[in-house]
Length: 458
View: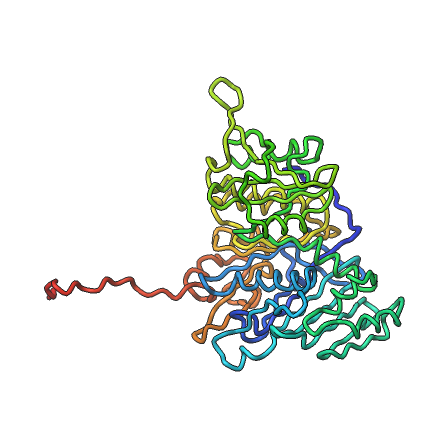
């Protein structure tokens, strides 16, 4: 991959803090912060926000045993993004999942709070909701010298703050028309109110979430023959030892894919002009690129790969013939290239899925090689790969653990809090695998019940 020597700070964005409570396995409030601690390790690649006099981490790895709650942290961001960007239909339930192992918690609201750096200002957004209604909502802008509350909400009562700018009368009118299951932020932006637009745009355009089974993923310009990725993708795939020397696409009739009408309608709403998305077909695992042509019609193309034949020519392969690791690399590379081309926060659940540890490390190293004190992109990921648990690669405050207690509740803790086992000269992988830091599965010996006809052994 090419190293970006400079990235524009226009529209700069980074997550500073995320707090969730009563969400899936997180019964009590859990805080995930990207504000750097006082440690100096790898300080040359940690961005500094002069306006706030703070340093913000460009990367974070989240560890934990199976079913510990790592993915639930990812799902919290996805739920919040969906709630803000897509909203909720009239009379439809809000898609939230409270902690289910406590009867009182199931009736209490789920809570989300996120602080985001947008153009050197902090946007502090908070929301609490049940499946039926928005209970609380607020938005505040924080700078080094001031705090401006844009609005607060308790139930259906929305109060505009002194910090609001623009048409207050119009906002008060929209506040009265905001449904109980609808966010005021979402309703206002849909009415072309600009006061909350920077936060909404960040949620929609600069928070990029990739799950292991993501149906859609950003593929803009991936196979555009005049696009910036045309030569980068093949060379990157060669560097990752996939054997692929080229990627291309073949036109395919959208109607021939056998897609259900609801999915086609979803594509019609998601694919905008000059954009493309990737669709993964379940049975064949074909990667289908959906884009709009000059007339605004949806067009489909099947992604294919090429390998070097014994005669030196290129041999065509369907992607289903590629290894799981090669398919995963093809899925992830556009997102990593986006990290180097514009400021985004990229969040990947199970980054190491189907990838060799050296390949995963290379992807991370390439990204970190582009980070400076002025860049504003972030990479957050969950992983089981303990080979990445290396202080030569990551700082202690860039590594986190999720652990589930005996009551089924998850908690979140930074490696930097384990002072005894986390000195610079300490092998933290050993401490982690020995269970001294938590975040590992509590396994029991596997036993096979004796057969009814078997004789007892002495």
